[in-house]
Structures are given as structure tokens and as C-alpha cells.
Image (cartoon, rainbow, N blue to C red; front, side):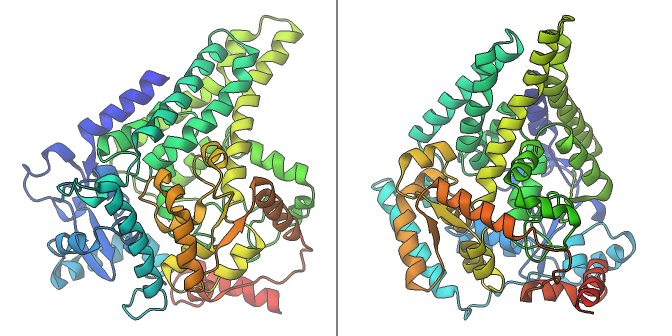
Length: 519
């Protein structure tokens, strides 16, 4: 299984395609046909980036393919915005090319499905926007921090210092080594101690490096950011994670229509007051029900089924357009997921059961306890940072992207190094959502300054004193959503832009649903 994951990652380097051409050969080939181009939309303008070799690697630029990438582009070019924009202008498409592409899309409907369904970006990016002064002061804090870190090394770009330092990599390597040691003991020697320890070390490894790597914040070398997640293949496909987390959640945080985290399983768990209510949501009054759903969120068959449904629908979680580069990439993806599922849920039964009741019991434990434990750790740490009364109330109508990011997130125990290590830096969620391309290690030292900027500009900074407070706030919020099925279907300003937009199937559906609730 491990070799399959490594081979998949290596094959990405050898045959990564952008619009159908090999990345290593794309500058040597003839201009691609219109169907092979990597086209994106930023601030209302279309760009053909097929021939552009992004310093962040093909995985980075693929996140912008066939979608409105305004917020993604702004999030990851905050320190290099002026330079990046000058480069971007060189790939601007002519009005004639845009019109030709639009005419083609009218028939095949394969590109920019996000715009077709939701419309263009709803955030205010004008120079005179309310949040401009807030963001300027935020960038002063960030620039001053990294200028001090750079010191006399002026020959190096400031962005080179935003990745993981040696100490952070040491912790990550330490945790990853212990995880693989426990995995070996669990799958080869069938050790009970290794079985209980594996998900704990796995969480520490994944949260301290896996997450940053898929935000392109682990290393300045894109090869490292692409390969590193495959060293921990037990959680989720890195490809799907980019769609769910980097493209979906980080751009549309707490948006009841576009955030995949909120729409993970709406038929079983209601995570927003703006979501439709089902009778089963009444079970959220029981915390045992909530923890049970957490335990199966990333374990058992659910990830495989979610992947399968996403490939069929062409949307991840019905929120984010799914873009596979080639059919071969899709096949490798499916093979990798099936292999991981077999190792985690089938292998214990094949190797442990010897006919006795004890061996059957042990096989069940080895097949389910590690996966369910890791699932609870992951979902719990993800949910408490966004889903509470404060975040939903303060953020629903924010028109500025960066203010929206701050007010849809919450941090806890920001001064605790122990909380930082145990959560992989996820306790600094406000800081992370404002600066997703910067390694969490640096966010710990900038946290107080970032909070001061928020307070100066009246941006709500939700902070809990410890993990327990944050968890309790989320669980109470979840219980409050377990209301009677007669409760009204609610909307906010941003949601109404989708609901009452013209000629979108989802908007019409929600508009009719909202009307029926009012009647």
C-alpha cells in the first residue's frame, strides 16, 4: 500500500498534465487546442495559464483550472501581489478569445460551472472597500515579522521564509516516524498497544505537516508539498482534500451552500441555521449521536462513497466543481483509495481471525477503532474552529473577504505551545484563514499582533481560553440546531444573491423552498 502511494506521487511528477500536456514538456509542444487549455478567471478577467510554469508547481495552479479563482489567488499572493499581478497580465485572454470560449461553453458546459451555478465572486474587492485598511495593517504585521526573520539575507525573497522552519519539520518527522512504527506493529505484529497509539500519532503527524503541505506552506519546493501528503495515505486523498478544503472551505467558509464542511452529511447532521431541517436532526440533542457521526466521518466506506458520488456528479459535496486532469489520474486515485480501505478495514480480518471468538473480536477492533478514533480527532478539531453561535452570527453578511475569514473562524489557547503542537496549529484558525499560505509555526508568533489589528478595525476576533471551551461552544451550537421541523428556512444576504439570481437551477430550488417555508 505504501509503495502504491509513493508510486502515485512519483507518477504525478512524471506525467502531471495541465490541460492534457505533460508538465515537463509543455513549453516544447505546439500551442494546445482550445479544449486542452488551463483557463481561469480572476477579478472578472480570463487568463490562459496553459504555458505558465508556476513556482508553486502544477498542483498549485491546477486549483484555479476552469473556475473563478479570485479568492484563491488573493489568499496565496498576499506578499507578492504586485509582482504576481504583473506576471498574470501577460496571460490575459483577448475579448475575442473569451467570446469564442463562451460560445463553446454554452454547448458543452464543462468550464466555469461554479460561475454558472453561483455567479461571480460575491466579495467586494474594490480599493475603497471597508476591509482595505484592515488588510493593509495585517500585511504590515506580516511583512515586519518576516523582514525581521530574513535579517541580512536580503538576496532571498520574503516569501521564502513563510514555509516550515527546521524545528517544525523535526516535530513532523518525529510524529510521522512514530505513526509508521505503530502502523507496523498493528498490521504486522497485531499489537494492541500499537493499535491504540497509531491514530494518536497519526493525528499529530497529519495535523503538523499534512495540512500545511496541501496549503503549499510546508516547503519552498513544490515537489515536497506534493509528495509529503502521500507519506500519510490513511486519511483522505490529497486530490480530494484540495477540492474540499483548499478550494472549497477556505474560500467559502461557513457558506451554507458552498462550504463542503457544512454540507458533509446534511441529511444526518445540521451544521448551519441556514440549512434545511430533517426529522433526524432532533438526534443532535444527544452528544452521543454527534460523536458517533464524527467517528464514521472519515472512516469505513464513507470516504470511498463520497469520492464515488463526487466523480459521478462532477462536484465535490455538491459544492465544488471537480476537475480531474486525465482519465489515468482518476484511475490511480480510485486504486489508491480502494487499497487504503482494504488495508484498514479488510486486512485485519484476513490476518487475525483464526476461528476463535477472541480473534474475531480482535479483528473487529483493529479494523474499526483506529479509523474511528482518527475520525473523531479530525472532525472535532475541524468543527470547533468555525461552527458556533459567534462565528455564524458575526459572519453571515460580511462583504469583505478577509473580514469574512476572520469572523467565520475562532481560535483557542493562542498562547499555549502544548495546544499548538497537539492541534498542529489548528488552534490558530483565525490567523490561518487570514494567511493560509504561511506555515502555522509562524502564526504562533504573529497571533497577538494579528488580534490587535482585528480589534483596531472592529473585526470580531472569537477566542476561547482552552480546547474545552471551544468544544462546548460547538456542541451547544449543534444542540441548538436540533429544533422542530417547523422552524423557518433562513437566509442571509450572501445566500440571497444565489437564491434570487437568474437562471440557476440551485437558486430556483432554494427560492421555491424558501417561499414554501414562509407560506
